Length: 519
Image (tube, rainbow, N blue to C red; front, top):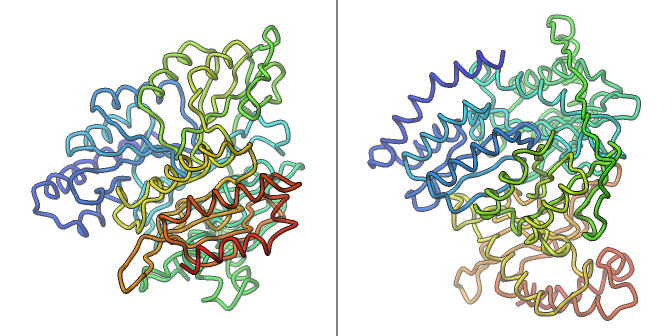
C-alpha cells in the first residue's frame, strides 16, 4: 500500500510546484496559497518571502538514511533554521521556491511524505518517543502506529475532513503525546490492549478526550480510526472553520455520553462492514551492549533501556532549534553505529536510541549544548517572527528568559519547564505545563503591546490530567523579571523545587504574579 501511496502523491507534486511558482511571482494570494500548500506540508512564512516545509515522520522516528537526507539538503540549500515540533516532525525554515519544491520531491526517496503535514488532513501520527526501549512501558506501540499512519495517508484523497485529525499512541503513563486528549488516542495497557480516547484537543475550546473503548485489541486499531473518521465526517462542523475540530462534537451532540454513543454506533458499523485487521512484526533489538559501562555523569540525559547494556541519550536544543552543524555531527557519529535510530519527542527534543556505553559518551560530547536544566528544556513554538498566524514571539521570549535566569545561577528545578505558545492555538502546549504562556495583544495606555497569558497547574500525566488555570496577562517584557523574582523566592525557601514549593504556596505565586499582571 505504501508504494502505491508514494506514486499517487508524487503525481500531485506538479500541482504544488505550479501554485508555488505562482505565489512567488505574485500571481497567487497568500490566502489562496495557504489553502493549497498546507495540504502538502508547507506554508509561506510571515512576510511571504520564504517557505517552511514540515517533514512528516511517524512517531518522530528517523532512520540513519533519513537523517543523511536531512543533513544533505540542509547543507545543499544552506538551511539555517531547523525546528523540532511538538507533533514529532522536523520543520525546515527560510526556504526559497526551488528549495521547498526540490526537498519535498526528494524526500519521497527516503520514505518521507510531507503530504497532509498541514491543511484539513490527518496529521503526523504521534508515538511515545521511547516506545520499544522504555523499561516502564506497557508494550511497544510503534508497529501499530506505523500501520495507522499508512492507513490515514490512504484516506487523504478519499475523505474530506472538516479540519485536521491528530492521532496518538502512548506506551507509558507519562502520556507525553497527550493521547488522552487528542482527536483520537490509544493508551497501552499492561495486558497488551489499548484504551481509546476520542474528541479531545488543545487550543480554543480545549477538551479532555472521551473514553470510548477499553481493552481494544492492538490488531483492531484501524477499526477505531475508521469509526473516528466516519463520526467526524458526519458530525463535524463543515460550515464554521473555527469549530471544525473533533472536540466541538462533544457539545454539538449534547455531551460526553451522547458523543460516545454516536462513536460506538459508527464503530459497530465498521466492525460489521470492513476488514481492517492488521499484522505486525515484533521489532527486535539484537545489539549487545554488555561490554561497555553506561555513563552516569549526565543526570537525566542518559536513560537505561530495557535491553540489557543499552541506553538512550536525550538531547534538547533550546527552543527545539538544532544547529545545522550539530545535526551534521550527529549523523557522522551514528552512521556506522549498529541499530541506532533517532526519535523526536513532543517536547521538541530528540532521543538517540540503542547506544552502548562508549557510543553514548560520543553522543553526549556532540550534544553538550543541550538544555542545562528544566527551565532551559522549555517548549516554545516557532513564534510570530516566522508563523503567519502567531501573535507573539515565543522563541524570543524563551531566549530572554534563559538569559535572565542564567545570570541568577538557579539550581535545577527551582523554576519549572515552561510551555510557550505564540497564540491560543497551543502549538507550545501551554495548557498542560505546570506553567505555560500563550501570546496575546494587551492594550496599555491605548497602545497594543506584546503580552502573554499565564497558565499554572497543567498536567499531562495519565490519570492526573488537567488543563492549567489562566491567571491573567503579562507584558512580554516583564515575564523574565517575574520568573527571576519567582526563582529567588523559591530558591530561598525550604522547598527549592517549583512543584513542591507551589503545592505549599499556591497563593504566594498568585501574589507575585499579580504585580506583573496588573501592570
